[in-house]
Length: 145
Image (cartoon, rainbow, N blue to C red; front, side, top):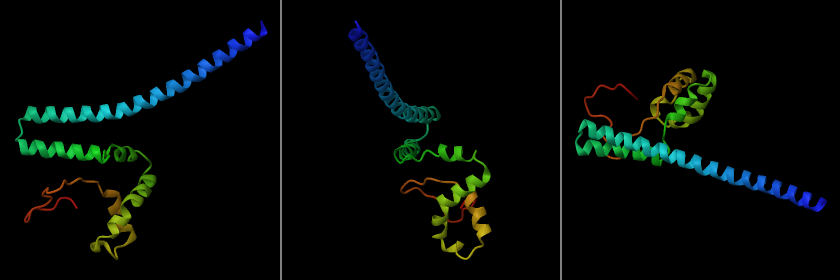
C-alpha cells in the first residue's frame, strides 16, 4: 500500500514537471510567433494603405523596401521611443553611448565643446536611407542633419 502511494506521488510530480517544461516551450514558441505576426500585420497594413492611395508602383516598391529593410535588420525604432520614457539623465547616457563614436567621426564636430556635443547627441534621431535613395538635392533647404 505504501509503495502504491509513493509511486502515485512520483507520477504526479513527474507529470507536473513535464507539464511545466512543455508549457514553457509553448510560451517561447508563441512569443516568437507573436513577433513574426506583428511584423506581418505591419506589412499587410502598409500594403493595404499603398493600394488605397493608389500610389505609383515605384513609390509603393520603395515604401515596401523600407519596411522590409527595417524588419530584416531589426531597425524597429519603437525601442528607442520606449527608452525616451526613462529619466532624462539615463536617456542621455544611453544616447551618448550609442552615438558619440559616430558623431566624432565627422570632422565638422572635432574640437567642439563637450556641452555642445552632448546637446547634439540627445537631439539625434535615427534615419534609414535605402540604397540609391536621394537624401538631399542641390538647392534644397536643410531641415535635418
